[in-house]
Length: 256
Image (cartoon, rainbow, N blue to C red; front, side, top):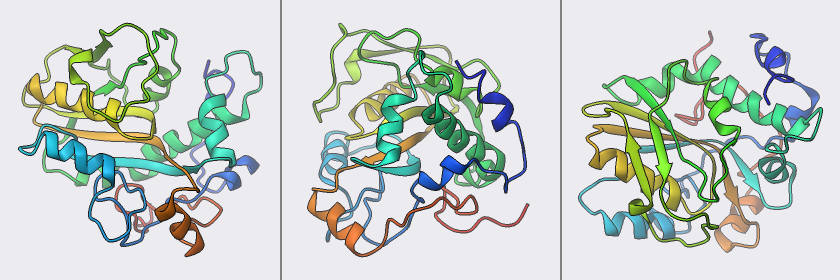
């Protein structure tokens, strides 16, 4: 599925972004962001969902850090892309190309910063599996832009169903492979409530992982949600994409 865009993504020149890249909202930083998922909040350290997840596992057992590569505002291009990039019948698929660029550029230019967030190097990777029984999800191919080795297998053991709940459901996931003492990169395409990703992160911790860094392509946002609306009105979500702004630190990366 990635064959049509792989040659483009393999171009290491940071200045040769496709014209579509201007539609990707920049990853912005403000003090009023959830300390876990970086969603807009007003007067709180965590958003409602992340606060509930932390309350359930007060002693830990969740992702040690969450790194979204971009915001995807409902009704705008990147939000549409996160649904359309999986369309295997679209050729060419510009939505897929934009998603690939985000993932590839994170690996090409920001991997050192991502690794530097912990003293324990990332030594394995896993994917948050589909909860709808989809077997040919392109996220496994996308992971290859980040991780060259074989991923730790995580299976959704529950019957196929849409996951609209905000609750954690770690019992629906099973981890295969030795993760004991390791730092795992957990990869997903979108974060809405974080329930799926945090459920898998918990199971990785139960299986013995020492650290879990969760990377998601897009942190989905609703403009009708008041903190997000204020966030937009304050100009904290400008248009455009700046490759030098690191998704791991929200700061300008050192020149490479």
